[in-house]
Image (cartoon, rainbow, N blue to C red; front, side, top):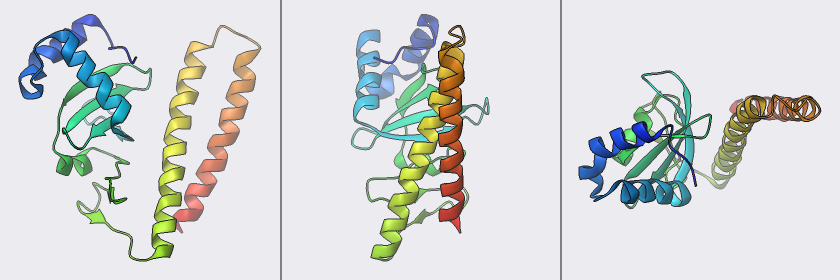
Amino acid sequence: MVPWRSETHRLDHYGRHRGELGTRSVEEYDASAQEAIEIGIRFTYRDRRTQYQRVGYYHRDTARFVGVDTDGYIVTHHRLDEDDMYGLTESTYWDARGTMMTMETNTTQAPRSDDAVATASAQAAIEETYSRLVGIHASVAESLSTDPTVVPWVEDELKSLLSYVRTARRATRG
């Protein structure tokens, strides 16, 4: 279960978004967010207001969106039209057709051949892995900083993986 930043934060967002989600209680609102996280498409983006990196979850069938900060706390839950996904800064959202929504082009880029599909799938896997490693690195570095034996090893391993993925990302971009 993913926690909210604070109870005050959860109550504030419930008050703002309960009508659009049709939830009748704070518990229903939270259950809706938890379900969207579990069954939604996972991607990363940069919060326009704060400029912080976020992990987003989007459930296409219900248009439910959940934003989670790098500390692992829910920061927002509301309805969002899928067309707005490309408007999220630095979004790595891929819709169910395997098409990446990008803010830079404001259009979808569909693969044209089997090679393009394989390349797009590899790029999606690399982007997903990279995003998850960044989140893990930040979380582990903060939460385990009191254990002098674990932190150096974990940080070295994650830095090594991040370096490997960065190199792979550059190679797939041409």
